[in-house]
Length: 123
Image (cartoon, rainbow, N blue to C red):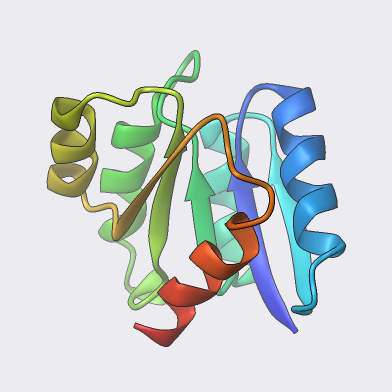
């Protein structure tokens, strides 16, 4: 079973992604964090296989959280994928520059999301 940590401040978005992943043909365990600070703590204690990161969050944004996570040796090799409504090309460039391994735009395509996420496990 693949453990996915979704760091997102919007509870409706967290619920949608959790439901889509849990209903897919793949076996996902979905952990959720309502902000980046809790997400970093969960990443360190729960050892996710992949992190989905919202970019626009209060307190600490997703880019700052990604930079911080990428410095932690215990998370070396864990892909971080931006999942964001910030859909401009510059937003994707900023996410990659911060250390994101991928970029998925909101609104999500519920039929494609599980396969999109699986592609990061294979790469």
